[in-house]
Length: 356
Image 1: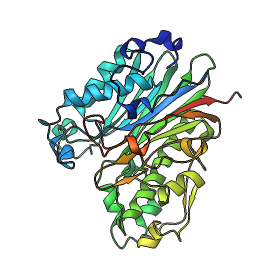
Image 2: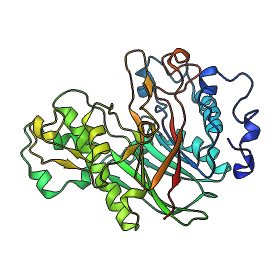
Image 3: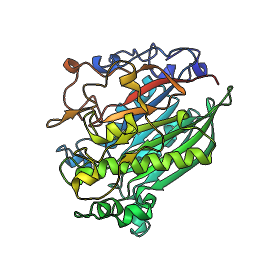
C-alpha cells in the first residue's frame, strides 16, 4: 500500500502497510508495493458461507462462524487495498458485510444472486444461494453503467436449435449462471473501462465439460455487447473471476486465443452438440499473471485438488504492471483453515490504462 494513496485510508488497520505484528508468513508473502499511477483489480472466490458449501470441506457454521471468517477476509482486504474488487460465491449475509466494510472506505457495490425468475423469490437470499459482486473505489473510478445477464438468455436461435445429443444446452439453461458488468470512467484521465465478474459452473468430465467453454463464450458475448453499448472498445475490458478452468482447459484457450476449434476435446461439437467454432466477442485477451511470467501453480489448494482456476484477463489497452504473488507452496497448507477463510486464494493485478 502506498502511504499517499487515498491518504493512506486503510493504513491504520495494518501496522506498516500490511506488515502487522502477528501476520502469518503466507499473507506477508503476498504484499507488494503499489506501482505508481496503477490501479489494483482483485478477484476472490470467497466460498459461500452456508452449511451446504462449508460442508464440502467437513466444516460447519458453528465450527467456522462467519465472524471468524470475516476477520480473516478483512485482514486480507485491508492489506491488498484494491481499487476494484470482484468476488464470487457471495450470499446475502456476506454481501452485507462487504458492503458495510467497503462502503465505509468510499466504495460503491453491485451484487447479483444466482437466481432464475421462475425460482421461488425466497431462494434469492437463501444462505446457500451463490452470488457475485463488484466494489469500486469512487475516488478512482466513476460508475457509468452496470448490468447483469443470465447466460441462458444469450443463446442465438441457431445455437438453441443445433443438434444436442446430451442436452448440454439444457444444462446451461437450467442454471442461474450470470455475468456482472460495470462500465467505469477513470477520474482524471476520463478514460473508460469495462470490468466484468464471472463464475462459470465446474464440470470436469465429458460430455458436460463442454458446457464450460460454452458458458465462457456466452460470458464474452455478454461483456462484448455491454461494452459496445457503453462505447468501450474490447481492448479496454477486464474480466475477473473463478473460471473453473485450468490453463490446459478449453475455456482458457478461448479466452487467451479468442477461438476454440471444433476439434478440441472440450468443444461442444466433440461432445454431441453441433455448434460451430467458438469465437470470443472480445478477441484474444491476456492473463495478467501469464503476462508477468507464468500462471500461479495454484489458486486453490484443498485436500483433494490443487490447481490454477482464478484469473484476471485484460485487453490490449491495459498495461499489466505487477501482480499480487501467490504464497509459496511451502507456506501454504490446504484451505480453508484458520489462516485462509476460503478454498480459493485472491488474485490481483496492478493495471494502467494506456494513454490514447
